Image (tube, rainbow, N blue to C red; front, side, top):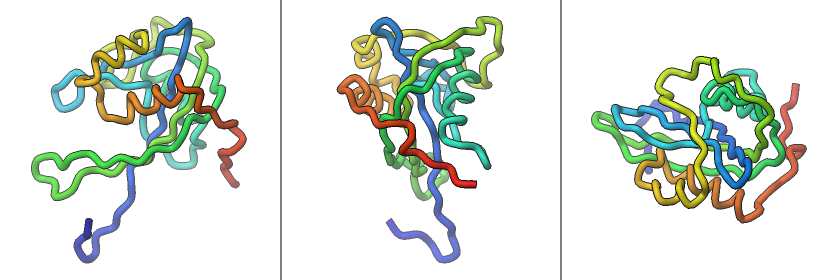
Length: 159
């Protein structure tokens, strides 16, 4: 892919949390461009925020769940198809974490666009792949279920 003169490229940096509890996965249904899609709790890294803090924040904001991060699953690159009026697709760099649920605030308002949080078995989530927001959803879950885990200490944020 080539970029036009003067155009600065940078990927969207996102985090995602694969929360497992009793053989089920915490998922979100969200409305994107008028379409109802499935995702993990996920979102963009904010300025001066650590990847771990972003994962905890996004999970709480999108589901009402406070979680404990247990491992780093992996880093994933993906380019979306171009939208109407865009010359190129968006580039994503996603950092995925494994987590366990700690507590739930059922009365908490969820982020704009989030219809609901729900728990699905891996089979239920896999059967609904046409509804996944991106291929990153299943890839992170598959890697997590296959035992791919790295210590959280491999992620460093320097002052």
